[in-house]
Structures are given as C-alpha cells and as structure tokens.
Length: 249
Length: 94
Image (cartoon, rainbow over all chains, first blue to last red; front, top):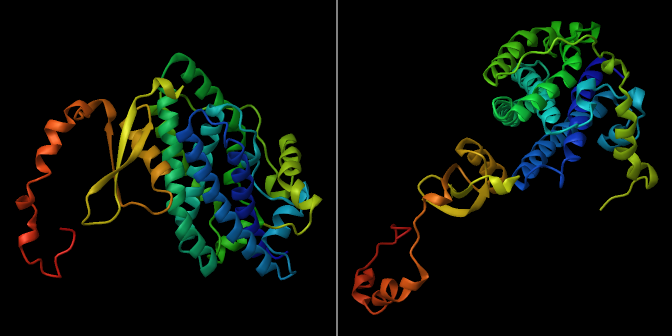
C-alpha cells in the first residue's frame, strides 16, 4: 500500500472504530435524547470512514472496496489510534474519549481542508462541521459532569485518567506523516498538540477537573499494534460479513 | 434519570421567512443542552435552520373546559375572514 493510501486508511480506521464503539451505546445510553445524539455522532463518523476507506482502496489500486477494508482485514492490519478502540466504560469515560478525539479530529480536519490532495481536502471540508459539533457535545458534558455533583466529578475525572495514556499517540509524527506533510498532503500531527492542549485544557479547567499525569502511554496503533480490546471489537464488527460474505440488504 | 430533568417544548423554523413551529418536546438538564438535544432529535433530516426551546412549565395553556366560551363564538363570524377581498396571486402564506 502506498503512503497516501495508508494515510487515508489511518484517518478512516480512526473514524470506523470509534463509530463502532459509539454504536454500542445505542439503546443503552442514559437517556433517549443522548441515545440519539451518540447515534448521530456514530453515523457521522461512519460516513467519514466510508469515504476515507473507499479512497484508500482506490489509491491502493488492488481492487479493495470499503467493505473489503472494513470487514476483511485482521487486527494487525488496522492502523487506527488506540484511543478510538478503548472500551466505552461508563458515560464519563466515553465523554472523556469523545472530548480528546473530537478535539484532535477538529484540529486535523480544519488544516486538512487545504491539503494538496483534492479528495482529502474535500472530505475534511465536509467533516470539519460534523466534528465541531462532536467536540461541542463532549465539552458540554464534561463541563456538566465535572462541575456537577461529587459523584459526577469523581467519575468524570476517572474517565479522563482512563483515556489519557492514549492521548500522546494522536500527535506522534512518523516518517510517513513527515513526507506527506512536506508534500502538503497530510497534516503534521505534532502541530496539532498546542491548539488541542489549549482547547481541551480550557474545558478541563472550567469543569474544575485536572489534567491527568499518566504513568504509561499506549503507542503503536499506526503500526497495527492494538490493545486487548481491539480483537473483541473486530470479532463483533466483522462477524456478519465473515459468516455471510457478500451479504446485503 | 431523565425523570429528574425538566421537560422542554421544541420549536423549529424550517426556513427563513417562516415561523417557528412546535415539533415536540424532550428532557434536558438545562437550556443549552435542550437546544443540542433538539438539534439531535428533531433536525436530523434537514428540518430546520433555527431552534427555540421553552421550559414546558413556562407555558400557560387554555383549558379544555373553556373550549366553548373561547372558540365557539368565532364559528359564525364569517365577516372576520378575508374572503370578501381579492387576494393577489403573489401574496403567499396568508
């Protein structure tokens, strides 16, 4: 797979895997209204994943379509960040993960709009509006839970602690992003850290929470190394397609 | 949990120039979240360009018991309808 295809696949896998995680909340969210909100966000991400995976398949030129890439790759071939695959936990964990991821994706897409690659620029231009809402949705909840009751504050803080070891990976550059960024195609992930810190830091401070200081950090998602949770997620996500190849309705 | 949250009435304006129309209600902890929930629940299919939310408790409604005295007297006042005028074709929404 060439570098452009791999880059599109990274972006697409992030969206696909997080979309699946958010889909797990459907019919299990605290309220009907929140159920629909999370489903909307999951569907936005699924839409992004579909166009990005389709594009990755086209650029690769090996005849793989979005379904082949989503449902017929094994764990080590997925190049999403580990943050996206983390289990939902309670609502606080999910909102912490949403705040971290949507804020990252917002800064990324905002800059990708001016990519030299017209397809990526187009996808980013549409997606950045969706992601702005995802970020706001998460921020609203983090503010209310953090600055809510003792119990909601405790659980929101522990949600942040849970996901924070996986934040650094989002901003790790490698040779691929280095070359593509130099060509004006990709965004250098390291450049997103400062604006991310500033937005997320402000939300956390207003929510009377504190920025965690994790003792370990997850890494390797972009090279296909995943957490224990990933295999279980794929088993569920891919089961139907693998049991009934080509099934449609 | 939603039982503890107040009820809000949702009004959506479908496009510029039209009025906000009542579309339903929902639960939310406060006004800001009510607007967001309304966006998620009632404008998923491009239904609106503007949303109002109003605490249901703030609405004073007419009583069904007053229906006769409130509304029936208007029934036979045909002269209150603008049916005796020619309405130009260009005038819409009248």
